[in-house]
Image 1 (cartoon, rainbow, N blue to C red):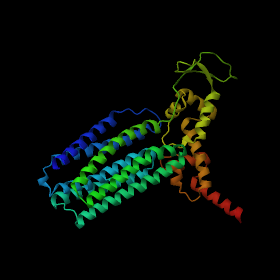
Image 2: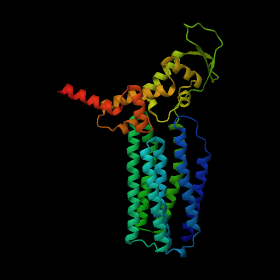
Image 3: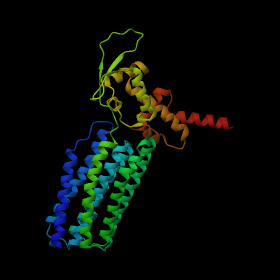
Image 4: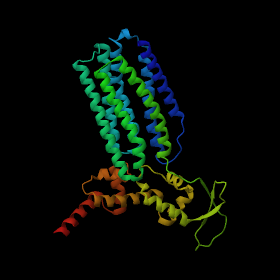
Length: 384
């Protein structure tokens, strides 16, 4: 059984390292949220590398150096699982949250998790590391608290994200929530193994989480490509060389890369129609969206899109999209008077409250807090 146990650890370690390489070299198409999605994938890669190396180290350690094989696996779970759960939580939270507050909180959690890992090292390698003692229960309790906090944060962030992107709800329920549920189940199984360190159960647990990590890597890869990549048309725009009068709108020639379709002309009205659908879906609320992202999504050359915005709205892209966000923020201030301005700023796509307040004042002439105060006074006056 001991030989089979260590063989399983070697297999698990090698599989995790191979999965890390797979994710690292797999290509994610360029598009909206691509940078954040790639960063989230890095956390998955780090988790796999860390687990793979740790599994190989555990397999290479002589069991005589630890009180027993059961204790070694208990340390492996209690010591490494908190770091694993933290990295997985960050991988799922980062692509859907631009909040600096969340980032700062998770950075603090990393420091706390690292201290917990060091405490486990000291306990298991310097103090014997036996289960059924109060230090073991304290360390396990800290792990449970951490896992609970991460679950709560993810659910809170995902709920906020879905309020801004209701069209993504089916994707979250179909692809993301099942994966997150699987991580939570594994965390719970890990707690059970720590409370009852049996060699056979530990072997089964290793096989289960190895198989799950394979599925997680494949699903996260597909999720990165299909779910954060908004549909776009494969088009190339070329301006015609025709000369037109000042009363006529410029004509843009559209070439669609298809064997069954010929080149056709696209006027500014077509661009306006695409932008109208984009605005109706409120995709301007996506934090960090750039004119390059928008041009790729609606299939319009960046230069033509920029010219269209400048000529139609008499402003540049950044001012235009901030104006859309401010209008949405005003609506949410009216409809949700209990919501904080920081929450509204995040919901409408601003990185922080300071930038939101600055842009709001530039457009409306007053700060968002003054705007809310005036609305409240008007409401009270009407009620009186």
